[in-house]
Length: 272
Ligand code: KIV
Image 1 (cartoon, helix red, strand yellow):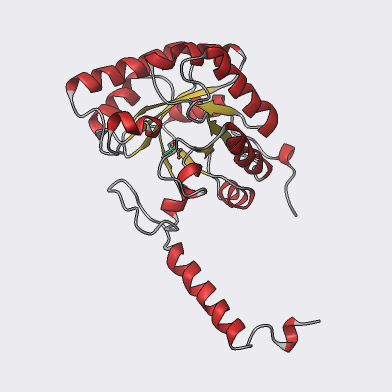
Image 2 (tube, helix red, strand yellow):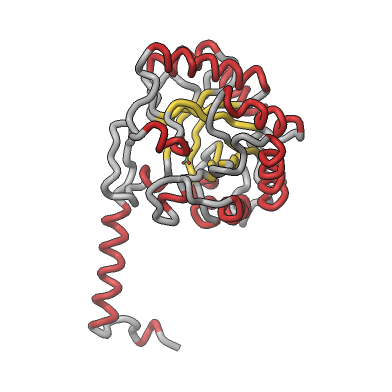
């Protein structure tokens, strides 16, 4: 028997805050479609991130920059339909919030109205302050994202570890403090030294979720295609692969092709 949405205790920002306070780690994974969201939600993931990494893993682009607001809303509404319990956060895509707080608010409202998601995520600190304030003023929960921010890849030049130098680490700390002060409910820290991530998680009251930020934060996020080994070549140090689905899928599909070619499939029993 399937469980109706309203019979399940859904995850809220308050519950995420309570998890930090009682020392329970928060699990977060990306999801981009209905079927995967159903599986991840059923397995107990606390937060589903409709990441703009959809641009890479779903659309095959080299960066996250090309994905559009309409495409993010399509992915987000599919994920929301597959979710009973998890808190669903959606990335505001590149170009939909930087430098114009009215446009940022419009983008966030479109995501909330058209997808039914529960919050949005924005990359950056001081430089996007006005957009964060404006979105929060509409009652939309905002998650920050500091450290390696892939939408700025052409500024950084590489996807290597950020904030190793004192000046960048201090800027990250002050941006994290600012995001908390503005009212963000959580912050993602991507690819920074574990000691710096610990400093942020220890100092701030809101949950800090890491990806490549070590174990001393309040939760972890990974791109689900990486965790499941669907992506074959991507093997950064921070990734733990829990399956090798590229092999499983390749084997299954090769068997199917072989069976079709050899006329083994479909059999009499598989026909009407
Ligand atoms: O888009 C994404 O998948 C992300 C995670 C890497 C945090 O922002």
